[in-house]
Image (cartoon, rainbow, N blue to C red; front, side, top):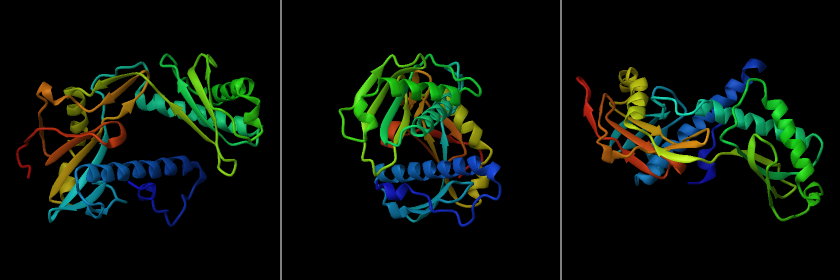
Length: 277
């Protein structure tokens, strides 16, 4: 799948108010993820990319033509039936990204050098409100102290993995990149991988069930794609184990789940609800 195929077309008008810019950007990223999910589904199910006919929309998120049928596709992320970690995974990841962004801004405000940096957060770290800026500055300062001196000269150097840099992180990878490019700082996570449970899938589908008939006004067939790749505080979810006898009663015509990388897809067995197509 080409990277260009994942890019969003630019909106014709910018958001009217600066205060809404963050929400606007998040909406763009959501649509980008939705399109990437649909494209990955089509690719790994053996359907041509041309099957995707409309994607910049809502309710449902995309329209595809498969075997002469118009199908509405709704994309969602798995929802935990019971919270497994102290911090909600989405919140934990969002705060981790905010910390890394703050670290990059702090570092680059003092050093005009582009680096590739990956910050592996400690699973025991618990984000607190308004702490991203302070923690980001602390991490940037520790990198300044521990990174090779060549890193500050913009010349090629052997990448390093800095251990025990800060109580909030397990390690920090620092590598070289072309100075004509901008620096790339990312957050990363590791932990135990668990299959999403039947309860998780039922919870996720149930949150979308009330909208099925709205989707069906646009397309006679409606499919649901569930992204089960939900990393968080020392734990990551993956596609459910169908050997446990998972079966859905739903108005969706078909329900699929994908895991990390969106390459593994499983279809969830289902029963039709009364009145479903």
